[in-house]
Length: 431
Image 1 (cartoon, rainbow, N blue to C red):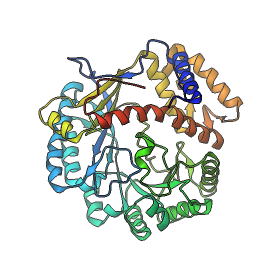
Image 2: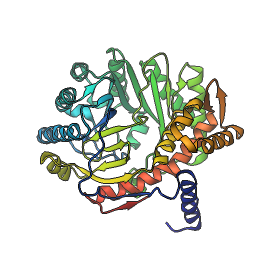
Image 3: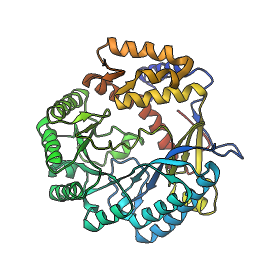
Image 4: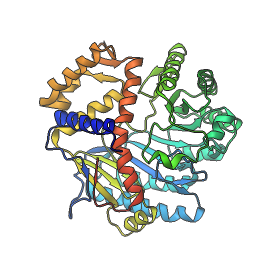
């Protein structure tokens, strides 16, 4: 894309990055230099990626392969070996949370349990274990295995209770299956049960979205995470066009649906806890992204380290062979300059929709005055209000942040993931 608008967007993006972080930060992912190893850590979180799916949804951008029972044992061995490599290089760190995603992790729960056992042997696990799953993969035996593995928080990818919308998304289950799965999870004593609900789908009305939210709450979900189609365009949209009659939702539709969602949640006791999520009651918040640091296990998993980001090879065979041989599976790395860490922290506080004002100086140091200037602009524009020691985004502020997130951050990930999906060991990717 080389249109004038795209060129201006790239110029503006680079100018903003340079102003915030400085010229020393290189926005390039490259293979780690020979001999590089991650720094020792006192504490971090862990992400485990399980790539298996029975039904590989065409809109899902994450690393996934069709499920086959013969692949589970090799995956388990490689994941255990990769976990051991991390333990050797970063030390017996405290693990403050575990997030298990995919794919559909519940297709390989014996494998997940084995990796969690090894995790407890090599690290100090002190936080909650969170996992995601799909309605067609939930039954009483799965619930029992989750409980035995110590899982506390569960997210169910409902997407919709409307059969037409499920069909457009190529989801191979009925609304009744989704209802039974959510009800079973809600009745099984987990600390938190989240339901993913999509909005701004083709042919979907505000009433449809509200009906999905109401049904999920009625069945016992204590957190609702809502997002529009193509919010995460990590791969080219052209790859998704086999979804019949599906296109990127326009701004007016997305705005109307988001406003309706926010209003319904406020009226029914669900408080906003991130740009996308609303929680009811004193339960732990389920979140897949807002961790200050984490190590990633599995093909395509990323790690956020004190000195930058690293990304595993996306190719399952390359990942398996490398991990099994005891070598690092990291394909790409982008180092951080010192200023980058503070701005990254502030970005995720915006995502949380609550910025702790007293923490800004500790996080950004000499850049704190610059951050406060930007926060005043946000406040004066009516996108946030002060509440105690926090600056809280308004409903309008949360919506426009979501658009900025799509335009900037997710475009970066789109560039990176598109290349990483095509080449197991890319030479370099500029974002």
